Every structure is written in structure tokens, then in C-alpha cells.
Length: 162
Image 1 (cartoon, one colour):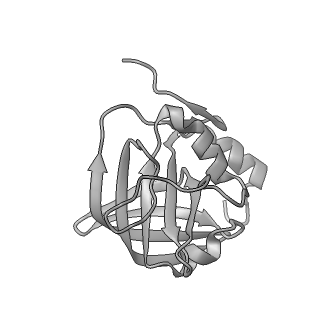
Image 2 (cartoon, rainbow, N blue to C red; image 1 turned 30 degrees about the vertical axis):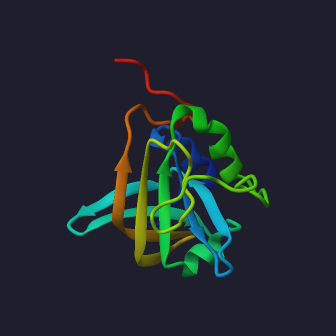
Image 3 (cartoon, rainbow, N blue to C red; image 1 turned 90 degrees about the vertical axis):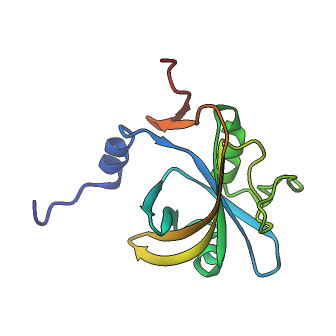
């Protein structure tokens, strides 16, 4: 295996076989403007301390902001948030559509009616290839009822009823 590397298209095809949840990650820049991106690379790291991680591409417009922010929020999306997921995955200048009514206690924007939201203080950052791994210590976690949006096969899906 040494010296053999999967091509980007081979890796994308293989990873499309792995279903994941869909999140929108948000913060505020140094001018207090909301910034955010869609992420499916999100997971729990630790319960003690309570840590989560999210990965952000260096090519993302919001990369410089997340490289230096002190706090961020994660919104786990529901199936009807597909337009929000697509907008935050785009290079759109105004991803927040004129402002949102939902905010964390710390003032970070979150997706209204998200399945759950997490408010995090940056715990650590790691540069890994073409991405930044952002680790956050969860200060506030709020969970709702319902089902998550799922990303699988390069498309958004609902969970199949049991």
C-alpha cells in the first residue's frame, strides 16, 4: 500500500457510500458579521471534556474567519432545510438572507428550527491537507425531536421510516 494514493475522484466515490448528517457551522467575523458553511464532516470527539469536531476546506470563503474565531455554533439540519444546506455550501455572498431570528445565548446565528444546536468555544485547530480540523468545547447543547437530514450518494435524503 505504500506509495499508492487514491485519486480525488476515487476518494469522492468511496466516501459517497458513507451516510452522514448535515450541519451548518456559524460564527461572527471581527466586524460582527455572521459567517458560515455547510459541513457533513462533523462528529463527537469526547464527552469529558465535551468536544466535537468539524472540517472546513481551505478554499471556503469563510476559512480565514474560522481560522481565527474564538467561538462557533453547529446546527444539525432537518430534511426540510435542504435549501439552507445548499446556500451555505455555495459561494453566495449573503448566506444569511438578510438576517436570522435564531441565535445562541452567546449571540451566534443558528438555523431556525434546527434539530439541535451546539455552542462551542474553540478548543484546538489542526491543519490537515486541504482542510482545517476545528475542535470545539461544547458549552450549550440544545436538542429537539425529529429526524436529521442525511447526505449519502452525493444527495440529501430523509431517514427511512422504521
